[in-house]
Image (cartoon, rainbow over all chains, first blue to last red; front, top):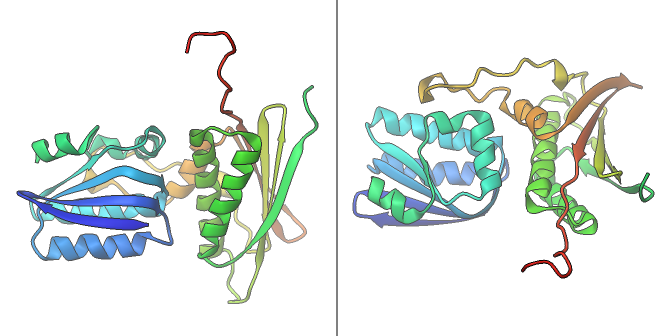
Length: 110
Length: 152
């Protein structure tokens, strides 16, 4: 999996490409938490080029969501393939995680 | 009755790096069967969660084990059997996790098995010859060729 990080005014974005599974989730967790530790409050994860996610990926996103809530920040997810979105819905994560259609909308929402 | 069944078999070592092999195998089976992207994803995800579960909790001796997979497509249904010689574990007996209303009451334990049960149409377990044998069934969704003469 490739992870591209960008700092926008008011938000830190992570563009994921490839597969987020038990093999790659730890690397992503480390990158996310480095950003949170160095002060990122609003995090956007762009799923546009992510082909695959498993519960290991959901676990990392949940952990980051809890950490950002403690910092009074927030996390936004955008541009998911419909079958990736379905996994968030089955897990019930869509009840507390904002999922928007495009990166532009996510940037406007932070 | 349709075509004779098409079957595919492979095995994976109890090593998390084998998830890549699993992904590649499922992709090539998906191409052979003309499966839709969604169907391919759902099968890969269910087998990923199961495999990850088996290798995380199934073996206590530290040795190498093989997990055997057999996939058979017939009459638009894919039947997958997964056999491992780990400790007895029946995932169909796991209660479904409570779905969260807020991030604070969200727990991820048991989520993998819950995903398997939701993504597959049937899940059956049996213990035989000191092996866990799980059978999954999933209705196939194929990439349809464009209709001839129809509107484009």
